[in-house]
Length: 227
Image (cartoon, rainbow, N blue to C red; front, side):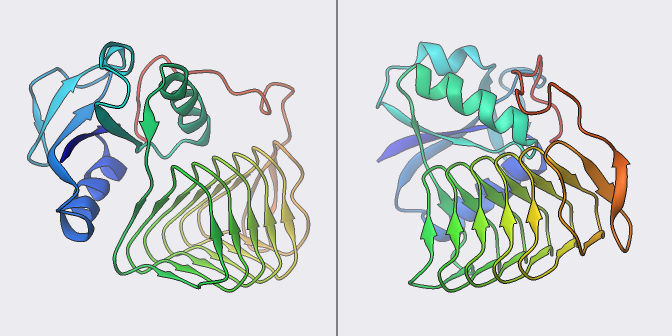
């Protein structure tokens, strides 16, 4: 039995602790956190913080598993690339109450929360995070590093690009596209296409913040912030 180190000691990290203990208790002898902003040896949700991101470099590859449990898509990509650059194994964690149809495909390194639904022929990209109660409809395509908020609905045939953030309770209409690294605010209702890198909010969703040139090229954050 290995040790699991969860990168990010915020809310999503605590969710992962509970998912692992409930859904895969036989897999890991111990669980720890890695976080830049929380002092080493502090207990968070009953789990000890091992240290900062230097742990990704210092532990022997293959000796432990890692889960990237931060809810910011840019941070997810940056930290995943750091971990994989050091040869570390980034695992998926899927809650035992999530419903995944057999025809759905799910990439590596994903997090799928309690009572989330991934419907028929949906495609979930690597290193995405799908939060509690989100519904991913039939034939939906979710790009890598995307984050789907709790209770969000992505209707059938919709496409969510790489690194897009769909806020809690937001809805994406049947067949619509949310571009890469775009943000759909909490509770927004998307009836038209959302361009890459833009932020939309409201019902119907309207552009709140236009695309910036750097949004498609996220950089590693200075700290693991919440998240």
